[in-house]
Structure formats: C-alpha cells, structure tokens
Amino acid sequence: MAKRILHDEYFRKAKQEGYVARSAYKLLQIQQAKSVIRKGDRVLDLGCAPGAWLQVSSPLVGPRGRVIGLDLQDVRHPMPDNVRTFVGDVFEYPPEDLVEAAGRGFGTVLSDMAPKTTGFNEHELSVRLCDRILETLPTLLRHNGVLVMKVFEGAEYPGLLKRCQRHFGKVKGFKPKASRDVSREMYVIAHYYRHPDRRDDDTPKPRDADA
Image 1 (cartoon, rainbow, N blue to C red):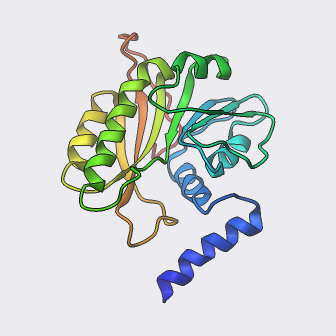
Image 2 (image 1 turned 45 degrees about the horizontal axis):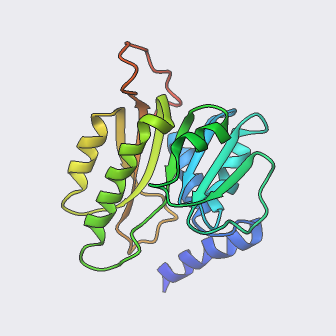
C-alpha cells in the first residue's frame, strides 16, 4: 500500500504543478543530481509526448535556450515560446532539420522512450533502442555534450554502458526516486561526448561535482 501512495503522490503533484505527466519529476531529479541541462542550452527530447520533459527543460534553458521535441504523436499541451515540437519517427526524421530548428547542435539529448512491447524481451529491445540513439549522435550532439536515455536493466545493460563509454568521458546509471519501485527502468547519464569530428584534447568543464 505504501508504494501505491508514493506513486499517487507524484501523480497528484504533477496535476497540482501543471505537468502533463508524473515523468516530469524523473527529469527534475536527474537534473538535480547530475546537472544535465544548462542555461542557454539547446536540448533535444526524443519521444517527447505528452510533453512533461519539455516542460521541465524549458525553464532550465531559459529564454536564450531552445528545446526541440520529436515524437510520433503530436504534443497537444501548450508549450512556452522556447519549445518547438515536430511529429515524426525519431530514426527517420532528418536530423539536420532538428539542428536547424535549434539554431545549432544540441548540448543535451534526452530520451525517455521505451519499447512498445512488454514482456520477456523488453530489456533487449530497450538496449537496441539505446544503441540506435547512439548512432544518431554525430549529427545531433555537440562535442562535450550530454546524453540521458532510459533503458531497462538486464543482462545486456553492462554492455550498453561500455559502448557508451567509448563515446563519452563519463557514464553512469541513475534511477530517480520518481521511478516506480517495481520498474526495472534505469537512466544512462553520459557526459562529455567525444564527437568523431573532434580529435583534440579539449578539457571538459564539469557541470557539477557529481557530473
């Protein structure tokens, strides 16, 4: 019963504070712990509907920043002026168009996407989804940028972390308190993207002590 009360608490908070989904608190907690979004940033939210992560990202980037969302479904909830959304398949939509809408490459790429199917292969499918996201980064994510993406824990999870470490200077798993206790969901938090077109020895500027 206690678990259900906790979960209902986030649902009620979302309604009271104007968020379209309780998932807003996952990103808020990720931001508080790992500082993944900066003022003035360009942020891309893959699989953005219904829009809770867009709502969280907007004030974090501020009026000089920009948040771009992409999903197969239209985001119907009104969004602030620094947010633009597009309808399309994450892996088929031209990435150059997203960068153009942002004005420059993204400093942070977010993904709260999960496989549509549930069951014994949910973990494997979520890992494949993350691998496909990694493949899109050279066009989307700037050098030293940040990636946040959801995956379900399982046998292939450590391998995914190792693959992320090939592309990022620092990679950690993180489970927000707002995630349901019974869920296997985990968020891969990756800082300091090593863009393939940048082979220099830039010294990354840490976003916080625990980044």
